[in-house]
Image (cartoon, rainbow, N blue to C red):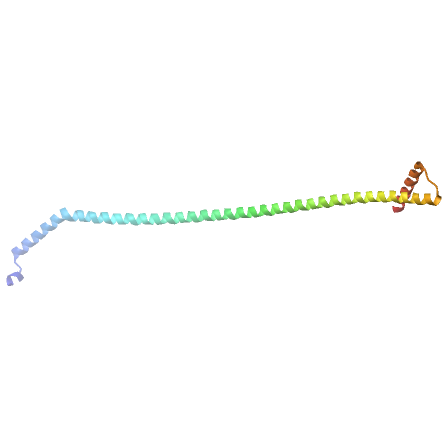
Length: 166
């Protein structure tokens, strides 16, 4: 057992030589591909991180664009609603104005009709009054007046009646 604890130069030499050859052999065959694989993996992770950052930036940009478009659409919608409301108010005002004009025209027409009827009734009343006056005068005088004289008397009575009214 002491032999295992005591360092022997030959054993140490061969151990170091084999270890060195093993390190050289592993460095030529195994470590280089392992290191390359590790570097490739590191590069892949870095590329993925950059791609994720770029994707995040693109997503944020797209989100901002969508928000801007929505804001534009909302503003356009409000403008159209305001325009439609104003158009409705204008249409309402036009309809009310047309209705007022129609009512005014109807009132004016009714007033003209009333004036015409009043004039007709007044003329009829004057004629009736003149005839009544003639009949009364005829009875009073107990004589009949001829047609021509009757028309002259009626015309004179109407003129006097109108002059008295004025």
